[in-house]
Image (cartoon, rainbow, N blue to C red; front, side, top):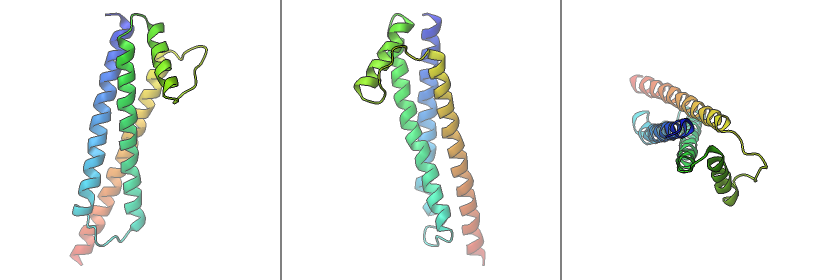
Amino acid sequence: MSDWKTATMRMARRLRRNGISGGLIALLLVAVAPVTAGAHGFTAALGWWLLVAFCLAPIALAVHLLFDARLFHLAASHESEAEALAAIDDVLARMRLRARTAVPAPLLQRFSGCRRLILLQWSTLAIAILLYGILMLDAVDGVAT
């Protein structure tokens, strides 16, 4: 297997792993937060809306990462890097997600874009966990008084 195929398959596995784990953590947080942090009080309505927003963002990014993982898996099935990049661009153009370009973006540029998505997903998830902690502290403080 050539170097670009190995790197592409490694990135596809990384995207799949981050997409699934980040999405599941966000779903778990959305499911558990109302029960554990007190859904009836809603003392900080803005906090709850922010929590929902910062949980939905990682879920959307997880779907995007899983889609990119499938695209990289498709790319790795081709013989040359040029054919692989053309196949990715063809799929994106047929789905009308991106217009066709004369020169496809290099693989390393696509990898760096995916790394930014992973960073964005985990950053929004960290903010959601922080908001959950604040709401949990508020619920515990409200019960004690």
